[in-house]
Image (cartoon, rainbow, N blue to C red; front, side):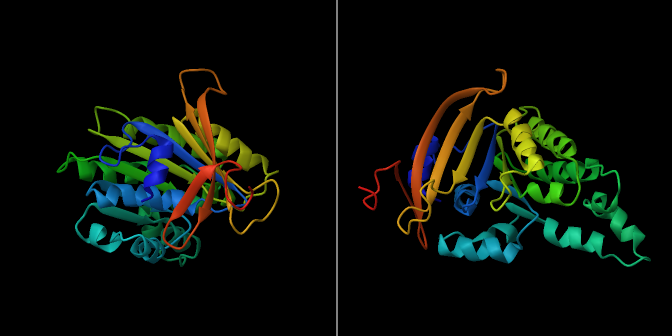
Amino acid sequence: MFIDLNNILDIDEKQPPDRISISISSSQTDNGFLIHHFLSLYIRNGYNVCMVSFTQSFSHYNNVGQKLGVNITAARDNGTLIFIDGLKLINECLFASPGDSGGVEKNPFSFVSDPKPDLKNLYDHIKQTITSFSSHSTVPTLLLMDDLGILTDLGVPVLAVGDLMMYLRNFMTSAQTLRSGCLVSVVQADKDAADEEHELLLTRLAHNSDMMLHCKSLNSGYCKDVHGELLVTWLDPKQNYPFTSRAKRMQFKIMDKTVSFFAAGMSSAVL
């Protein structure tokens, strides 16, 4: 967790984001520090986390967590973190043997082998996981989805991914289902800026987000002391799109165990 980032995002460490949806995106730079910020924010405070990863194994997040002083394995073992290994489950569906149809049907990612993908099973699986928290705990709950772009890469229509996130947002922010819930969805870096599906997915996420965090590379190119820019946009979904309420732009430098932030153009490297 990065204290300076909490200040930038107007987040209180002891009172995590409540009943909001946050989308994280990037273009040609790393946004992983944002993922680990929210992950560690909830785990450090003993809150509940359901993480659905389409890109990395549990060991990856655990290794980064150790650098940040967060014991992700302990959180999993004590039941405050449930990790849904989408990468593994998707591979099981794609490379299942012909006689293993029963196992594929029970897999929440069985839609990846369907010519007309239906994400209802995935939604039900996530909802059931979150509900298992609320049945015995009243602490805040985070649902972290990393990386939704993988679903479109697998042929799932952007509309279907957008609908999934709309339903998950409604579930996570409803006072009838959770005392305090937050949804963080991620679209990772290295996407083609000209990819229409990628842009459409980001637009769909914006329609279901209260805050957008976008990391981008510097317009001036590579700099060893400034790794990119972070644009924070607070949104009001009740308005017509684009519905920017306010925005903040910062530059950042990623180090081994922390991230430093500074106002655009104020790094000592560019002064």
